[in-house]
Amino acid sequence: MKLEPSETSGILRRPIRARNTKWAGAIAHRLAQMGIRPNQISLLSLFCGALAGLCLFLSGRWSSNLATILMLAGAATFIQLRLLCNLFDGMVAVEGGFKTKSGEIFNELPDRFSDAFVFLGAGYSNPGNHLMEGMGWGAALLAVVTAYVRALGGAAGAKQPFCGPMAKQQRMAILTAACLIGALAKGMGWPNFIMTCTLPVIIIGCLITIVRRTVLVIKDLDSK
Image (cartoon, rainbow, N blue to C red; front, top):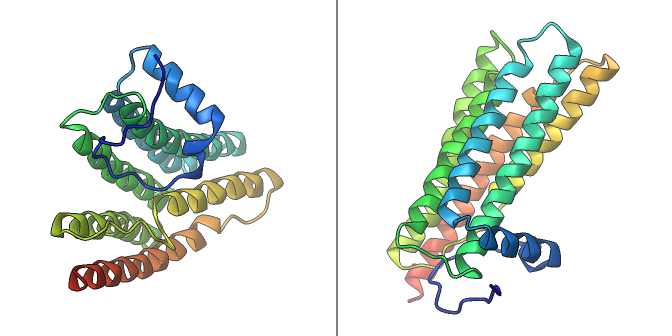
């Protein structure tokens, strides 16, 4: 089966450069040939998000440095796997011609839970630190609101804004970097404050993104 772009897919997709690469097209083509459907990939992204959150949660609960390093590396890996699932579910749906009426639900809802799992895991990665726990809940809430503003704009008839500075890919890139830096710091025996610094950055970035997206949606609606 040849993957062809669908002009009538009706699926609004986040602009991702990797979507136009040969390797992504080849993998999407293979997934479609294997009979894997977009909704299954979307659910797999939820599973990856949950595992990333679990790894983050456990990373601060081991006395062994090696176990902590492995948990942080695991979290970074599962975060990236989640993003790959987000890439391929849309590609298989559109280029593979496997769009379903329920596809938008599977495309959006697992992402919101994945965000919550990941940020709550980060917030609880330092046991007993109630400030970090609060920041984890704050980041999880604001990540959901960031996506909600975009979807609300679309429901109201505006173009859905995918701008940052803290869109999904940017949130996950920063958190992945924090996991890897944290693993390195643990391995070198350095003090590890990276997650304590990362969550406020994500929170502030989400607030800016919410404001930017809201302004863009209002301007677009008022211009019609």
